[in-house]
Length: 340
Image (cartoon, rainbow, N blue to C red; front, top):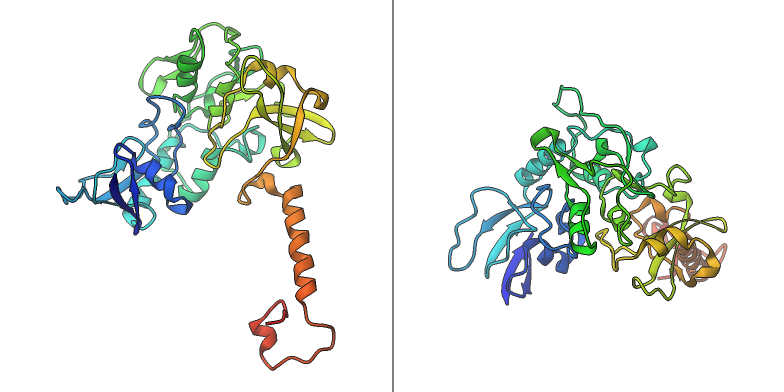
């Protein structure tokens, strides 16, 4: 076991744990953002640099600080290490520079992007980015391409996180797409349109952190905050069969894998479950999905309304009867006018 301190919080973690995963064990706002790292994909991470942290103490044996910010997804913890993330102003400034770099070519088309509302880059830019960019050159542009029967690629939005390539390498029998060219002209491509036909190929949509890879059966049908996510399952001989159904009224607009608080899928699902099973009768409904209260998807969400209704009832039950005398200043100290 190794002891590491992140933003003043100390935790013991198994040897070989990365700084990012150690921060996730602690949880909360000290967890660095990650756009390319994916815990379920081998060799992922180290590309986007958004998870950089400042190591102020290397270890007990070698207390010297590391000379520059390091990628927390690729740096393992040493016993006695001390790390700064949100407590270091210069680190936050460096991360803002990384975000600015990611947005050099990414268009500000959030109003028309299907990923709006569940885009990690949108959240990253809002929390860590800058209001303006210093980039004064034309952005690179690509035509939208159908790289599969149900998958569309919009390279304008791609940040080259390599997640989709890792999925194709590790989940499918034969990868038919990848990164071509180098440097600023590098792009995801298949050379030939509509060649991604593998049964697990739809997972490239779920791992994409931006709107570069989208579900053609869902495009422009609805904003995600107008839909109602519901967890469901079915017996499937190709995958786990555990999915999230996105309803609008009684219609299932799309089917996705379930995701955790860091936007990573809990289990991979097959194309049959994703694209061919969009009738409620084909699923066993488990109940409403748990959505983070920080997400716009939680707006007018039934679980939120139920909790609000419950809290309102509790406040009314504990409220002072109408006309009951209170002490001077009690209203200011107790805004809800509840019994003490």
